Image (cartoon, rainbow, N blue to C red):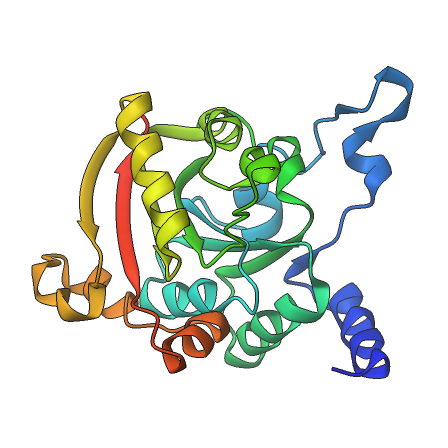
Length: 236
């Protein structure tokens, strides 16, 4: 993508009513060692962003927001929020949601490192993690979105019993997540190392339907023979 197109998308996102783009000063306290500040939207997503009282579901590292849009289309009784730092990527999902009038689909442009700034205790009902960077380098382990550091951050705002979904092509990252689930005593509810070959094992019809949604990266990796995996688990 050319720099001009990126700049145009950044400009669009700044105007889109379904995109929130907080600045660093909104989330980082420079006077207190870089502590994460509570953002004013914390605790107010339903009332101020979605104007309803429906459950909130996150898609982390949402890229083009394929799952945010697909889930919003499928279930008008839930609010979906795609989170990514790449504004030029989430522009796609935000534009589609606006064009289709999906008032229950929104986007937050921020680093997931700052995710606790935006949600209060028990404010989020569910998380989807779709094809994030697997961070395979040993010195990047803490940056993996299913690493203990991130799971503990999610715990701060997830409702008790909330489900976390993971869909990925990368064997290393998928197996790493399974190891964390086992070591930390989380509850593994479903696991498939080849979800498209085992879709019939997914009992929930709506979940089975949405799992067939393909992200940009999924298409890219599938074309070169990568097998797509899926699991879901609970941390409490």
